[in-house]
Every structure is written in C-alpha cells, then in structure tokens.
Image (cartoon, rainbow, N blue to C red):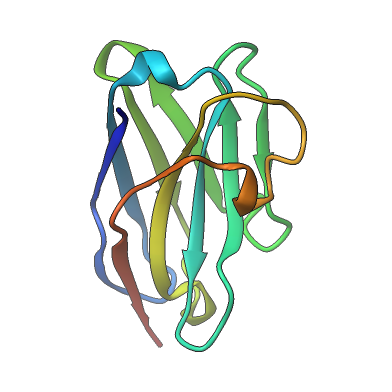
Amino acid sequence: QVQLVESGGGLVQAGGSLTLSCVASGRAFINSAMGWFRQAPGQEREFVAALTWSGGSIYYADSVNGRFTISRDNAKNTVYLQMNSLKPEDMAVYYCAARAYGSRWYDDSRKYDYWGQGTQVTVSS
C-alpha cells in the first residue's frame, strides 16, 4: 500500500516562493511516476508537473514551466515542487500523486493510482 503525505503549503505574496514536499511510503509499488496536480475552487483538477522514476524524465504544464521545478530525493522517498514567481492564479489545493505502472500520458490524472490529502497554497495579490 502506498501513502503520500504532502506538506509545505501556506500563504505567500504574489512573486514569492514555496516548496511543497511529498513523502511516499510503500515506494516499491511506484514504478512509473509521481506528479503534482492542483485544484482551485469550482475548477477541475489540473496537471502541474510529473517526474518518472526510471529515466527521470520531467514534464510541466505550460502555465508553470519556467517557474516551478519538480525534483526527487530517492533516499528520502520524497518528491518536491519548488514554486517560484507565484501568481494569484496558482492558488489551489495541490495534490501529490503516484502512478504504479505505465508510460505516457503523465498529465492525465486518471492514470495515477495513489493520491495525497492535498495541501493549500494561497497567493495574495
């Protein structure tokens, strides 16, 4: 069984930075990728970034490319999302997700098998 626990959310002014962390227990069951998604009130959950475990390939949504960085620490079974130059439109609940198997479609939330509880990111203008 995989459990994902996010942390690092909070309140930040526009232009500021935050780093989210996601610790994965049961890491042996995650053979494909880990990703970050976000959901703002009244909106659908959307892809933010993903990282594959095998080759370390990285994918970003256009809206965050160049501002956000996804990374991992294998020894700690932890994936990070460094968020810089935050904008009010980045405000959402951010979810960590893990995918057990498969390739491609890393931006599709339906391909992920495990989800964290979410952490709120609030950006004030």
